[in-house]
Structures are given as structure tokens and as C-alpha cells.
Length: 476
Image (cartoon, rainbow, N blue to C red; front, side):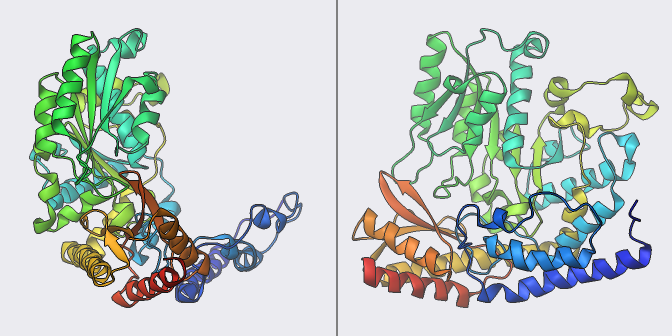
């Protein structure tokens, strides 16, 4: 049998791995942002079976350069603007490395008390930094937990809503013929439909509500009418999804107005601020969260814009009773004195999974090494760069804004039309100079440029814009 790495071998290989990451970051500016490989190219470079005999770790590092890097779209590239960022700052990577080294499984308090209590403290810190209501604190009726993604948070919120609305009946006997209804705007994240499918409600349980054409925010009166119509038809309103920064355009639903409608039918209010929520670390950028005190649950992702390695999605509930009521299962092998005492939180009851990593460690590392002032500086930089892009669009008559800039997201198009817009964007993406994505707004194609990487500067934005101008000269 091959021997495990000795402490010295681990130290040497660990240094080599960190060196590789540092060299990778240093090389990014010269690499094409989007991977140019064709389907199957990477797989063909791998042997058909695992090696029979052990290989040195150095061989793996070498194959990262030979096999993996050419097949990567570089999410840490300073000119990656295609989707909301997935930041991996140095501090977060080291925090994640420490979590892997500790290797604790924090499914219940007793399996590693520090995993649970650090997470509680960090989420209390973070919730306070965002200006969230006191009810979301761990010492209040609710509390926070780190999920893997906002999609899981939405699913978890739906399960809690179903438990509350059914008086626990759904947990015992299933959704049956409950004829439940879930609401979200046309801009709501696709995870809402997936949550309804996974919860056994089915796609048809999701009622899609129109948005205001100008702002792309949900039409509150259309929501009110939809709820009234469903109630009159014998349906049971269950949950409303509020988009506080939609994926397509960064649209901001009116949380307070939606919550008022939800109150007429005793619906669960879930605020999905996956990308935009973290901006609330800046007091002047909290306007889109006005009314959040009426929310039953709230999610935002530090792993997008707040310098924290994927995956780290922070989820809070105003009252944990429905959440743990929906998900708590205690088999004999997990029984322990701490759980029986009722004095601790067992996070296995706060999400669909049983097992859980020590995710709080990387967020703790980010909060401590940047400080709130450093995080505010990072967010404000992204907003300022987006405003800069909006100015560039306004100064070039070939382009026009589609919606007002939303924090660090800018949505625009070529005046010439959809075909020209898409052709110019694809030319930039194919060149490797930058990476942009598109959406459709009011039936017309538009380019999305989302700023947020910890490595992006104004020079990077200007370089991407020049590439777009050159593409527009050809295709516009």
C-alpha cells in the first residue's frame, strides 16, 4: 500500500500548491477569459482509467497547467463580467484550506461545538453589518445558517413555509391535494420553480407575476390580483419570492409592498438577495432592503460579491420554529445530552442535508482580515465602476442603456438591434479579451456587464469597453 504523505511532504506539497495558485493569479491577465476548448477536448487528455500505482503530487500540479487551465473559464479574471462574480480572495482561500485541514463534520453541536458556535457568531456579526432585524439574530426567535447556495435556501424556505401553513400536516402526510400556490415575478430566479418541484408541489404551483416594464420589479397590484383570484378559486397561497436584485437586470422588488399583500393571505415572505444583499454592508446602499423586517426569511451570498470562496450562502429566518419543525429528525445514533437539553442549535435541522462543512471559517477569515471598512470599500468600488460603464454607454451613440444601473450591474445594447448586439458580445467573448453575458428585456437582447472581482480595476473595464467598441464597429 502507498504511504500517506509525511508531515514534511505535506508541507512541501502544500507550499507548491499555494505557489501554483499565486502563479495562476499572476498569469490571468494574459489568458483568454472564456475557455476556447471544444466539447471533449479536456476528456481526451485524460487517461481512460485511474493509475494503478501512486504518482507524485508534482505530476498532478503539472497536469493542472497541461489539462485543466486551457479548459477553464477564469472566474477570477479581472475582466470576467459575464455573471455575478464568484470571488475567491486570498483570505477566504486560506480559511477554506483551514476548514479542509480541520475536517470537522458539524451536523450537530456535539460533533464539534466550535463549528456551530463560530457560525452563529459570524452570522450575527454579518446580519448586524447588513442592518438586518434583530429577530434574525441567534439569540432571538430566529437565527442564521450558512447554506451552500441560494437555491438551497429557497428550497429550505419553501419547506418551512409548507410546514407552517399546513400546521405540520405536510410533514406527516405529504402535500396531498393541498392545491398550494407559490408566487414570484417573471424575473424570479429559476430555483423557485425547482424548489416547488422538489417539494412535491409541481411546476404548476408557481404563479408567475408580471413586472413593471421600466424597472423590471414585480407589479404589486398584479400580485394582489393574482392572490385574490387564487383564493377565490380555492387555492392556498403559500409563499412569495421577493427578488432584491434579479439575475437578469438587478431589479429590486418592493419588499414592504409585497409583504403587505402576503399578509392578506398569511403567506411566507422569502427575500432573495443572493447577489445584491451584501451591498447593504454600506449604509447608503441599503435602500433595496427597505421592508426586510417583514420578511420571514432572507438570503444573500458572500460567495458572489463579498470576497468569500464558493460555497457560502447566508440564510436567516425570523422564527426558527417552522424551519426546525419541517426538517428536524433525530435518529437514535444522533441522540446526545446537549441536544436533549435544548440549550444548543443542531444545524442539521436547518437545511435538507445532514452533513455540513465548517463554512463559517472562510467567512470569519474575510470579515476579520478585510474588516467591515475593507468590505465597504470593495462594494463601493464595484458600484463606482458600474457608474463608469454607464457613462461610457451614454457617450457612445451606438449604444443605449436598457435599464438603470443596479449597484454593480449594467445592462445595455447596441441601438442597431438584437443581431448586432449579440454578434458584438460574442466577438468580445471569442477574443478572450473579456467575458460578458446576455439577457432579454422586453423581448430585446441586451448585454450584461457585472463588476465585482477583487482584481478588477477601471483599466480592466476600459479595456473591455474598447473591445466592445471595436466589435460594434464591425457588427453595429
